[in-house]
Every structure is written in C-alpha cells, then in structure tokens.
Length: 327
Image (cartoon, rainbow, N blue to C red):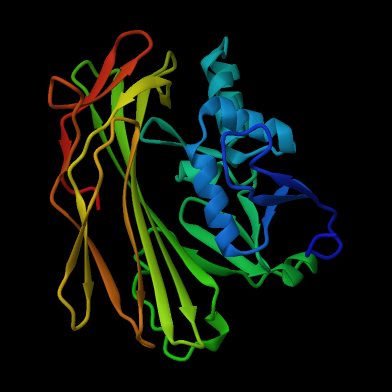
C-alpha cells in the first residue's frame, strides 16, 4: 500500500530495462507520478532527463505513464502532418492546455524539458505530502489531504523570480526536507535565412535542506543551459525539430555569502545539447543569506566556426553567434 490515502498506486523502478544503476522507486497514482520525498523527486527527474529519447520512451511504456513531454511531442507531430490550415488551427485550439503561440512560436506552456518528462498533461506531480501542478509562471502546491478533499487553497511560487534568499532562522518545520526552487529564462536568435532559429533555455535549480539538530544548511545549485532548434513550418509558425546539436560554453557561478569571500564555480565543457554547472555545500549557520550571479558571457560554438550551431537533418543550420544577457 502506498502512502497516499484513497488513491490506488503501483510502484515502478527506473532500473528495469533501463541503463540506470540506481534503483529509484516511482509510484504511479491515477495518472500522476508520486514520489516519497523531494529528494526522490529531484533524483528521478535528473536521471530521466539524462535518458536518450529511446530509453525515455521505453521507460514511459514500461510504467504506463503519459507525460507532458510525450503529449507535447505528439502535438508537434500532428501539426507537422496537418493537411489543411483548418486542421492545423484545430490542433492548436484543441491543445491550448499544453501549448501556446507566442510571437509566431509554438511553445510548451511548461518551459523546463526535464520537468515536462515527470509531470502529466495537467502539469501534476505529488512530492512527499504535497500535491503540485505547474504552468508557465507558477508552481502551485498544497497538502495532499487538501487535494483529496478538493480544497483550493494553493500556495503559488513564481518560477521566474529568484527565490535564492531564504532565512532559515529556527524553522523547525523545514528540518531535513529540501526546499526546491526552480527558475527558468529564455533567449532566442534567428539566423540569416530566416527559416531557422537557435534557442537557449537557462534553468536554475536551487535546493536547500536545513538540519535542525545540528543547525546546518545544505545548499545545492545547478545551472543547465539547453539548446533547442526551431524551424518555420509550412503554416508560418516556428516549431521544434530534431537536430544534431553541438554546444560549448564559457560560464561560471559566483556565490556571494554575507561576510565571506565570493566563490566561483566553473562550468564544464560539453559537446551535447545541454551543459551544466553546479555546487553543493553545507554551512553551519542558522540564518543564511545566499545570492547567486551568473558572470561572463555565454559563448556558444560548434567545431570549426566559433558558433553554436544546430544542424538539421535536412542540412540547414540555425546559428546562434553569442548570447550575453540570458540571466
């Protein structure tokens, strides 16, 4: 029996038929993924985001879960194969709960690709004793008991605001439970032939865990830059398309703690479509004030031409020369 009353559930593992060594347990509860703790949620979300498209699809089929990402990709496929403009508009109108058209770009309402892989079409997930759902701006949360009793007193947290400053002073109710603070930013540049676009999404995930008995705070931060290529379709909208991606970068995190010397954490070089920079520290201080700043410019380049390039299967490239103020 799972820890959520009334609802039925089954448990699944990321280990079965998947190239993951860790054996993370996931509960599928009436179409919603349920995690025993925030730690489990963050670990599974990270592992799922690292799966190849093939292994991710295998995992979805194995557990019988219909994710937001899967639904979104299905809509893109249907739009690509629409025979008439009326059919095209009908598909858009029928899926306004998960996509939006903004400046002629068809976008998912939930920005984070790693989050889209573990929430359902309604943006729902259960983390510990909290039910949450997401839209483009907010994370809405409430105790699972309130959700089951159809209450409506959600707490809304704005995803695009820096929630890095937190006062832990004697907050016993937060002991040993991580506080997850996701944020996301977006940048895009069109290329010269005007039918390709290179987009970058910057996602920041800050996690805090307060150990009340020792009055310590464990602080983790991860910055992920993800590259996406878009093309202009037959009907005049920009849509995501599959590419071979090459993304290198030069950036760092500077962490400024009150009363301490700033510390710089350098990102690692990568040649995939996403890059990371992060750190984890434990601080013995009941009241902690932390600020985060991204420094330098983001330099994106493909091998040989000093640019960040998405090269499509049709041989046409979308080039982003550089981006300096994504954060």
